[in-house]
Image 1 (cartoon, rainbow, N blue to C red):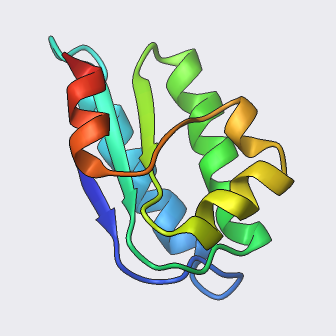
Image 2 (cartoon, helix red, strand yellow):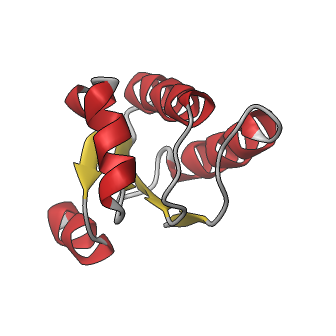
Length: 102
């Protein structure tokens, strides 16, 4: 599980992307090849959506399951309005995401 405690914006998107990619690549080949990204900040910018979509593409290519936890309604709304929720496995609570792994 990777917690993202800050807004992902143009200023930090590359740094956060690199960190998430490292986590995802570590999960590759493990028995439970799943990465959970917990978006704790209620604000999600287009840069954040881009990071998540890029991460999803990488996860698909290396056969790692990617789950996104979006506890704030505003975050889920952004994912819905950008249609990113059609391609990402989004859960409103961490407990639900962890249950989905089993």
